[in-house]
Length: 84
Image (tube, rainbow, N blue to C red; front, side, top):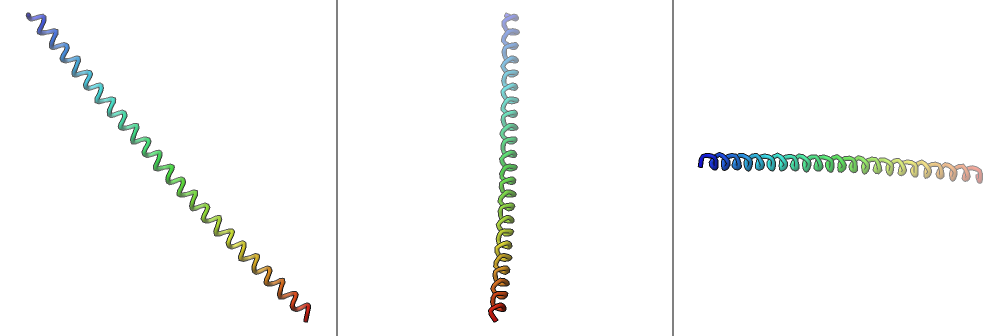
């Protein structure tokens, strides 16, 4: 009878160890999920930076167009003087 009781106690200890292992695995999964979320946030920030760069390029193009218009006006004035 004493031997049987000891065997039962050992089995209970093994079950507890298995439970602890499962808890550790769950913690690792949560850490991986958090890591993925951080990567997504970084990607979003990069996209925002790209959008800002595109806006700056558009502004530069507008400035170039304005300069072209000024050159055309100067050419018209020169033609008028020649006619006179």
